[in-house]
Length: 275
Image 1 (cartoon, rainbow, N blue to C red):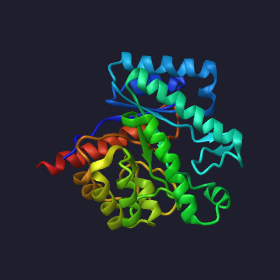
Image 2: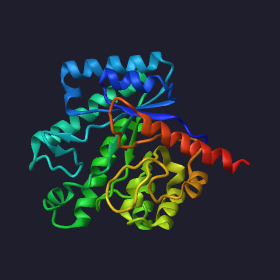
Image 3: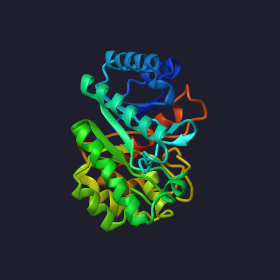
Image 4: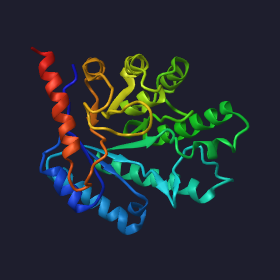
């Protein structure tokens, strides 16, 4: 059974970093934003990474920014339609990968987002063509990042987990995968069997988990134990070699108590399973 990591998430705000480091996490995920990709922003990010490494944390993930000028950084973006957004996605990923190669880190990129997907899908003649283009972009970044990049599942019609044919297609591309439990659960409207099937089918290629609870209806990012996911069933299916964080919505971004409570909840289940 996988040993559960105390994995915490923060931005580059010094108050957030100080808060997370007090718990001595084993895994630290930086949630980057558009402002981190100016010259000064990249310098601050590099300094924040060194601060976390100096605290003895070697397992660090850099989460690609979600938005640029209000638009989601959707890999479906066509250069000829939205050139500025396309260039930002490209350059910001390259910037993160440079840090990853230099400092032995990992970069996480979303295969898709759900909130603006319809806008991007409208630029393609069919879902099949959009999916093919999505894989083309994923292949591009996979080749650039190699062992330093992973791709996270969405709840959109693009790059989601739990449908056997798409899962097998993803496996055929040999991507390193990040698995968000809530995204898969929500995609299948709270279907526990679908979540467990996806965890099992993709397990060998999963290198990182976002352990998040949900009611299975909308994107709610709940503390573990406050949603409908059966963590007793999930825990034995996790890849023992993968890292994890608890990507929970916080009441206060400078206080990770909901993330820590989720860790403690899952550790209790882990302990009970050994009795």
